[in-house]
Image 1 (tube, helix red, strand yellow):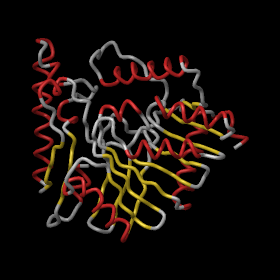
Image 2 (spheres, one colour):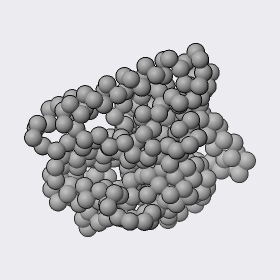
Image 3 (tube, helix red, strand yellow):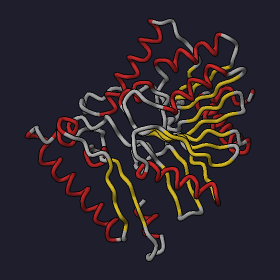
Image 4 (cartoon, rainbow, N blue to C red):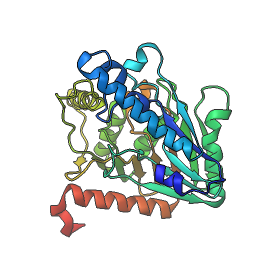
Length: 318
């Protein structure tokens, strides 16, 4: 991202919004403030914070306005994973806007992911739609019409409230022929039940996720270990409730993209992992809902490539 901003015109305004999760976590996904409490790691954490500030000052030296959102309060800084701003997008003026799910980091680089590029009036509407997060009053989730085929949906990050998740559930429940889903995590809660019900009534269900998450004893407080426990809980609840649907694990790399295609006619993509636990944690999310067949075909191609990576032996029958 530094190289992107360095290549931009010097006289143009440059703005970079970063969730404070970044400033409170190590590259291994461990809480910095928590590790500062231990003598054997405190010095390293202080040095890490200095390195972070040096990097941020390099951005400021390019004329980039840095904005850090959602600073954790009280005990939250020791477990800074709740109430996060999970948005990811990029805009160039009023002309180009990328809706994406990938992060600006090396941790998830190389995972299956994608961005959808919008131009012209659609880009301008998306830019305005995302900026409404700052300008609109209240905590209500909202939607913005981009064109006749496409809408932007934004979750404000209120715990237990998610317009995006509600729309995903509605489409799962109404699917007639097929559901293709991709997420960093296996769907849980009502989403898992809705997918199982769709499978039972004859809809073809395929959910693509990352390789099985492994625990990391060397970093006991890491976010990765939290995800490992969450996924174990997901599978336990599925087995307890007799819920099942086909899950494809990519054998080569992680699946960080977030996308769902229903009956080949409607696609929902963005930042939401279709996780009910995430809804309860209160993350701010964004998603595009579209019936634009050009976009849907591009997303279908992402699924096809991911399936080949997950099960290369079926290459001859696809």
